[in-house]
Image (cartoon, rainbow, N blue to C red; front, side, top):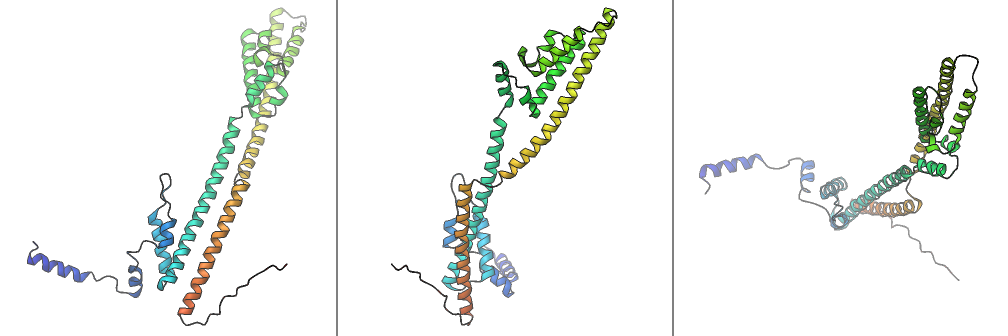
Length: 294
């Protein structure tokens, strides 16, 4: 049991906490136990995969009630409807953001799955020369740069441009690169010049390396140009994907328009009621019925 001293101390402490004393504080404190009204209670989604914050909704409801100060059940109902409609509008904006993120992600994923190197390899294996198409893509130029570097290493190792080195691009299948290298090999094989064999072999090797280096420089430049173009195209595709699909966008816009009309109608009705409660003479709203005669 509580002792007499503890009971006296509790009474003294209770006198120190008398609650808010200003009108503003009392106005705020009277809503402390309030959660939300009928509309806002039903608008909250609480499912297995989506749980909306009841704390955020309650805070929003209290903020509107404190700002609009409804009196009576009718005004409270209108404030409740305004808050519920605003919550649904926020959900529509979140749905729009989700659709945009999904659309951008799907477009990026579909582009990442397209591998042009598969197409080029299949072309080469069927006898079609893919080199001209490869020059249009950064990845294609990168593949040709890698092949030419391998050819260059083979020339440095063997001391000359051999038939085996020419067959490096596309597993020995004829193509634009291999034909250029073959023409270079044939031209070098005719360079005798009257010099001794070792000197001529070294001269042919250096000429082959210079030709390969020139080809590499051209491919690197084409690669850089393609990268700039592809980056600009990717940025344009990302910008184009920022809007949802037409059918989804139309659905969201119609939903938002309906909610906005409901919210503005409730706001107008609340304003009329509050002005009438304060003694103003408010004319009845103008209504019009449209009929169609035969």
